[in-house]
Image (cartoon, rainbow, N blue to C red; front, side, top):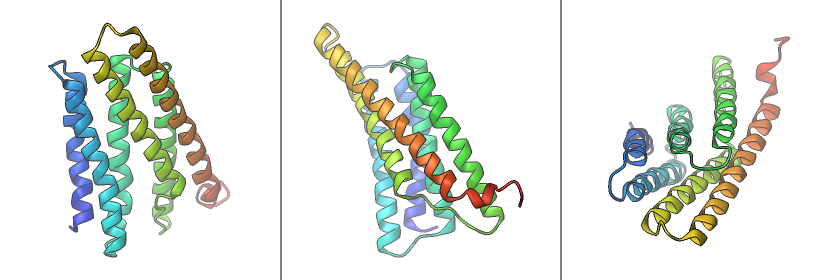
Length: 191
């Protein structure tokens, strides 16, 4: 297994620890969750850069990397539902899950026909927007936990969190629609 794929596996292994830190209430748990999530997110950027610069791109990596991203971001969104973070977080999570099931199914069908669908620029932008929204949400919760009496901070965190989460939901819909349009030949009911 090459280094980029090892980093992807590391991201998968970090995901349950991130979710535990997010959900378990101990001193500075939001900070711990934020650090784990940020480190895992960095592995996404690093593994891709290494794979491209050293010509280590593999079909295994093309399948595993998006799966690792989905596991990490879905864990965060599910944690946010449990913690009731974000206006309409259930709907945002629903949008994310529907898109991911749709694209994963499309990838499976195309793989069955001998084609691997790699992530495109909009899929990567979607992942970055989700990761940024998740980081902002956790950072905001950590700041509020440090200064719980600041109403102004609470309102700012609420506004920034909700805007970033909904922007990521819009990016999710747009990138999903583009994937379906670009790869419609794999889901043609006549074939």
